[in-house]
Structure formats: C-alpha cells, structure tokens
Length: 172
Image 1 (cartoon, rainbow, N blue to C red):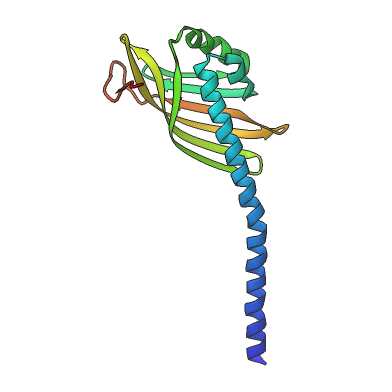
Image 2: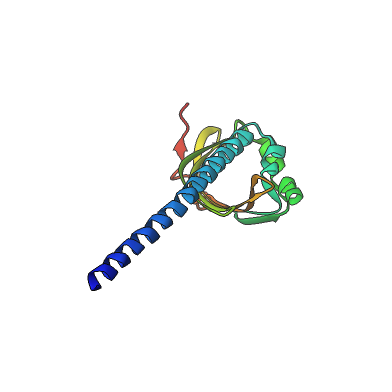
C-alpha cells in the first residue's frame, strides 16, 4: 500500500512537472518572439538615428515617454514626444553621419513589458575626428496596440567633462 501511494505521488509530481514544462514552452516561445520584435525595433531605431529621422525615432516612443541623457554636462530629462523632439532634434539634424552600434544587449520580456539593457557605441565627430563614444542604455518598453513602445529610457555616456580617454577612434 505504501509503495503504491509513493508511486502515485511520484507520477503525480511527474505530471505536474510535465504540465509546468508544457505551460512554460509557449511562454518561452512568446519571450523569444518578443525578443526578436524588440531587436528589430532597436535595429530600426539605429537606422532612423543614422538617417536623422526624428519622426521614426519618436514613433517608437509612447506619448508620455521619459528620456534621460546623462553625460559630461550632467543629466537632461525630457518627458513627452514634443519635448523630446524640441530638445534633441536640432542636435540630430546638425550631426555629421551619426551612428549607433549595439555591442551588448540584454532583453527581458514578459506579458507585454520589457526591460532592455545595452552597451553601445555612438558615432560622432569630436575635435574634427570621427570617434565612437561608449554609452549604456536602459529602457522600459510596453507592447501597445501590437507594437513595442519605449516608455522610459536612460542613456549614459560614461565620460567626465573634458575626458577623451575611453573614446575609440572610428574605423570604417
């Protein structure tokens, strides 16, 4: 009798484990689909940045998006698409051949929300030399009406004012 109930418990746990794995498999598939969609979004954002296309950049942002840029001049914080446009479009338009290259990327997605962490190189002209400036991005995304939208983003350029060490000369 004891042996039969122990066997039943083992089979019960096996069924619970199998059911858990079966339920987890679609979630993993959904997570990988979300990750692929977010990777495509980031690739599109890098292309839009290189093309100086502020409309396309802002289309990926939620209307109430919060963007923070922290660099040598301190922290700049803008909320809402119009304020983001007003703050950053003039610099983007004036930039010579801007570029973004993701060097490391982490995406955690679950139920229409995602956290993105990335290391990147932002191509820029500094002192009449093409340079790549290292930066770190942290962003929170939400899936709205079938599209991923940036709800908040924090971009940090880890340079001290006047410090050009750590800049990587551009090579094409």
